[in-house]
Image (tube, rainbow, N blue to C red):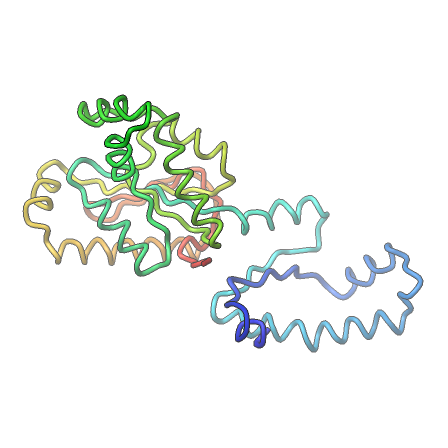
Amino acid sequence: AQRFEQELAEVSFMLYLETSHETMKARIAQRARADDTPETVETMLKVFDEQTVPLVKFYGPIGKVRTVNAERGADEIYSEVKRYFSCRFLYMLGPPGAPVGQMGEKLELQYGYSCVNLTKLLHAFAESGEPEAAEAKKALALGKPVEASIACPLVIAEIVRDMALGVQNFVLVDFPQSLKQAQFLEYRISCMTKTMVLNFSRADAQDLAALASNSCSDALELEMKAILCDDVASSRSGLGVKQHGNSSQELCSSDAAELSDTSV
């Protein structure tokens, strides 16, 4: 493991299928291979205890072990394992004037997310020569959501590009603008999602836009850090809202743990 990381790449995480020696022996017996003699089985278990278990103890304290209970059937194990290989999307939303773009960039810089800003993508698309650019430009001028068939391919292209580089964690700024957009994206990319809403009043948003207060930005950053730490500590899925001062976090359709992991 050390040589691999020194010569090739840093390990994102280690997936450990945890099970007892009794279960291991029973499964080895079920496969009924001719070379699975009692002596060979004992040797394999000894090597596992001496070589593999220390890896778990090494990577565990630095947050790079994902442990799955393997005392169950293959389908149950797979249903838990697959969530560690899905993209994790954090939808960053807020009213006009809320610093969602700024917060998304901070998450990208400090926590390893890839920030995809829908508003920036749409403005660039509206000025392009694409056939649907005029429709996007009109929707932006009216302050209306852009059709999912226009907006979502732009977002998906950014995500697919970064996925090819090994990125799994994304903060999607000003996305989704509508339920159709969320459904469009989540149907096409296997993912787990959370939604963070910066719940500012109009006066708060105007003050932020006018003052661009560093102290307010720092306070929001600390608040988001606390929320992300809560996510790391919890692997439960469900729907809920957590209030934090002037901001709220909405958790929607999420069974993802450890949203702040960096998989690059």
